[in-house]
Length: 508
Image (cartoon, rainbow, N blue to C red):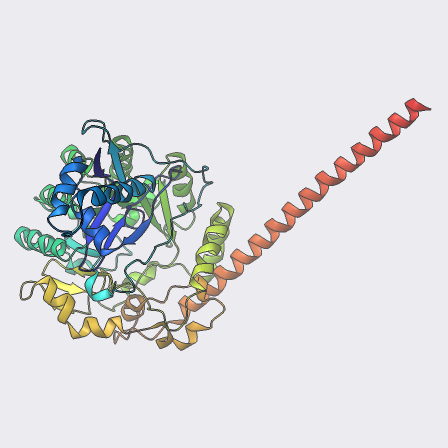
């Protein structure tokens, strides 16, 4: 029997356990993708050793057992082989591995299907099984690195949190390749390439290729105006790669007025369609601002027609230099009402409510977010930030230090890891907490002094409005459904009485 790790699965081995996962938490999916996803799980130390014998290429179990015999001393082959086969087969059934009687028949096949989800529903993910015994701490599990491949950009989006004056540089090729190697040695899982515009980098395909060779999941954040066939040819080789782009309106003039680049609408839409044709998962981001508040919903409709995931965000972030100049484009609270009404009409209410219900379960002892616990961002200068938007908070530099040194030794990182939700006391028990995201980056950028703990009341009012809109909409919808069901029952009862009367008349 031959076994292999599925091409769309990630495996990492740690000192006392292993981690195996699909790409659900790191990539994008098509809206109608109702296929089963195995999710993520931990395996024991011995299970991790067994899995380390496999790769994305088929391997004979006999050869695997030969290698394991040199590791698990004192156990006979007649005992070891059945254990290995049983363990591998259990992971085949869970969707992590593929098996076959021959190497040629050991290929990735479709996973078990689940009922098709309606628009906006999230596909259930198998809960994480902590077989690691609580050993999986933040300091030994750097999941994700965000690279600003280029601060330079061919667009000049009016709402961008990076001021135009800062968009001038391209990251050194050797630096990013070195960091990728170091990240993989730290068992990182995911890489995001962003900017500016990452496709401006002449060696961008080399970055994609190296990520594929290192078995890294990749998201590319690009405006797609510079997308080439060569880019697509490399992208399609990595089953763990997806793309995110921004589309602001289906009105070319409205879109181009935001990007500051004439013709950008046509190029971005063309890029999306080419990615769809190539089978590359793509997500549309549609921030809502004054320029597209009346037309953003057309993007949602178009995305649905083309089976593309779309995220709508009604609140843009302040610029990272604390100037707040880009906030002139932010919609007012009065304008937010109309935006939320459009969102509700397109089915966002239930999705927002489900996300809110999860957030409401969090306590003051929970971390604020994943920054510096599972992720960090690297700038074109090699500076390390907690996240892409928080560029005023430099926590290290990878020209002067290794990634491991910054991740394990930075005092700022230790401080950030220790911040809990109870540092935002008014948020912990707020009735609107599920409809708001406590974001230190947003707070820091919004305040001239960069204070990450001071929350502008604007965000609180947005959360309050959103909660009220969602709950009111769902209540009205529930009442309408109840009335409809009652009407059906009444019609059925009336028909039954009519039939009974006719029967009795016939009998008489």
